[in-house]
Length: 577
Image 1 (tube, rainbow, N blue to C red):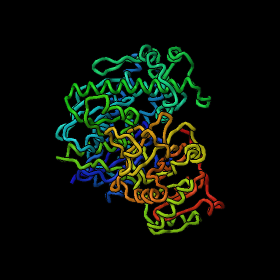
Image 2 (image 1 turned 45 degrees about the vertical axis):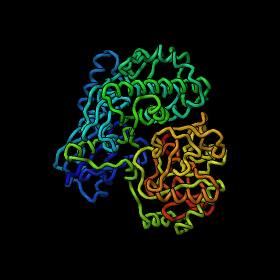
Image 3 (image 1 turned 45 degrees about the horizontal axis):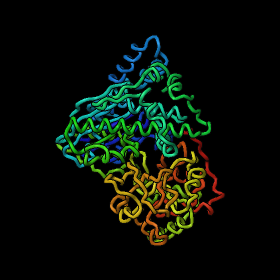
Image 4 (image 1 turned 180 degrees about the vertical axis):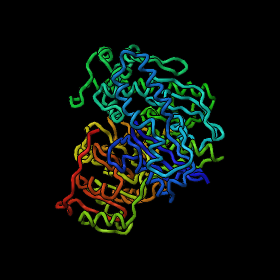
């Protein structure tokens, strides 16, 4: 029996994952413990959680594997400095401090924090992404494609997955990156890089793609083999601390939007334009991957694979017949992928499963009860049937419900265990959730969750996997009963729920359907703006009390806001994302 620990750290979304005898036992992001969104620090808490969940200590580990090769990455940074000299010193000096203090010494840091005498390995960054998707898929043969900002040197990678092995074929190296291009426009439209890309995606339907030709003529070009070329004179990330420069703004015809400026129609049209350009670039890469590998199945990963609008176009616009994308396809999933990569070398076959998202922390009845008592919160404990009745009634009358059950999801999407639920039939529910609960921009959409038995009555089925909120689809013409979860362009990032995937929320939705006639709820992550998804019962209670949620459900405990208006608690503030 081999025990493998995967870790990622020092860029964003640090995480840990433990694999025992080829099977994933636990995985979690460090941010869930530190409460620092996108925390990049050494994931000591996440590692400890994984060990405890597996019932092991660090001395039991056979292999620890890091999600990238630090010296290869530093070589790229140094090479960029030398090519841009005398420019480029500012970003190099800023990066050098982190390398000297942390990144060169990840093995030493781990061995100091955890007693361990075994082997410490390094997995190439894009192989970490590819492993997360490939080993979690059910494919024996597939092409793999990874597209992100940059790993060590690669920005796009194409290869094959055969007989449990990843075989790299070709890669495009920094700085010509689809991910960095999208991040540049994220900054141009006034959002924060590495956290605001999904805002840009959400903004796009409010605009028209009026500037696609301009972007293709002045900023990025794609070739027949799928590779791209950026006009590097218009970007600042090589020799400055910003993604874009004055020449980028000149090309677009207007200065970059500042974060708190009004969102004018121009920037909405820019968002629509870069979304369309990026879609075309990704389709170009995937088409080239099919031509190169000859495979009809695809495993796809990297940060760009979180763009659910593009994902929905893959089967329609490429020769691939099946696609698998892991729920944590961004850097949060790299520890998961690195652990599976190392386990795949040791074991003849690893046993990751496609429906293995609920692998985070779980807090039992006694822990939840203790948190409620300690914080002096009024509550009631109900039977399963009573719980479904009371919560479905609350949802039907417009109450917003915090839903906290079982093991936490791994990845950025709430899939029914750390969720905020709302009634999609109430037209004003989107505004209520954005302004009063999530405390974020009003244009941001909310995802529907629908019973699988009623999916076809509400949504177009284009053959994609809708279980993990990784694809958008169209709401069917004539459906007018769920206005709060339909985006500006008539699309929705839907979660198609089966009973086996999440039995408890399935039962709640069945009861809601019986009472309301609607088999759909709004499902968004249980957090407010600037904080990670809730982890502990205390996190859930604080988020509930700090927002205008009406009902909190933890296990079979139900808490009503109106009964707890006088509860005193230490309010927390978070840096805005």
